[in-house]
Image (tube, one colour):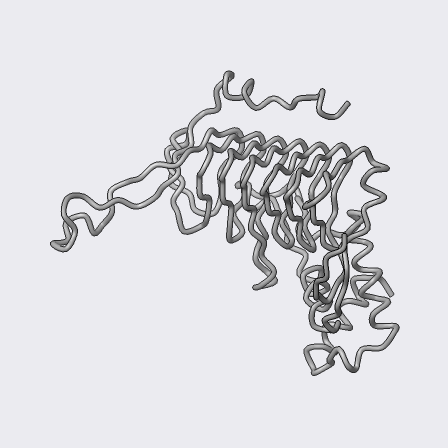
Amino acid sequence: MSLQSDIEALWNRYDEGLTAADATADDLGVLDAFLESLEQGIVRAAEPDGSGDSVRERWTVNEWVKHGILLNFGLRDIEARTHGGVDYHDVLPLRETADIGERGSRNTPDGTVIRRGAYVGSDAIMMSPSFVNIGAYVDDGTLVDSCDTVGSCAQIGENVKLGANTLVGGVLEPVEDNPVIIEDGVSLGAGTRVTSGFVVGENSVVGENTLLTPRIPVYDLVEDQVLYGELPAERRAFARYVESSVSDNDLIPGAAYKPAVVATDIETETLEGTEREDALRE
């Protein structure tokens, strides 16, 4: 049987009432093999399939992978653990990181936390404090800066810059929903928040303190359209406020506004300002 079929069979048993107390050594062996496959980048929560007209439609969610992650919570008991002299309680230990150094990636001490089941590629940098959760995929050459969080199942492409204090949310449930996806070459400014399965198209540059979520409209001035849940490729995006439908309410003195994101053509000087510093990788 394949790993996928093993996970699907285990999920069916879990759905029928299997508990952590009932899980056998073979069951836990399947879960361990699954976590190792995630850490090696062999399986992913979502993958680009090359089809579709929008950035969102170019990705396919692997529901069975999300099932496998949920099983690791449902079929394991909380244990007392120690890391770096600190006691903590979780169903999983932290990820072993020897393979990361072998691929030329770096994680600085005292606060770079990588949970089991997360993939970090080659030539990547993780600054402390930062956190990469289970099921996340951080591709080659990406910078995860200080105070950044990469949520469960989030998919981060190659040569991405996550500015300091950036939150990339995760989506485990519903299992059919897209996780947050940041495609290749994207630069997210400091303090950016990307949540609820939002997809950022490749080579886009997002201004600092911008909130990207499906509930906030993206006014794409390049194609003269309003989008939800995605930012097209090669855009410069920044936060603005637009007039709200409650502007004329008697309880509100003056105008009322709601958040929005404006996307324009990317400019040469913008790209130059976000160029990767190769000296950091030497």
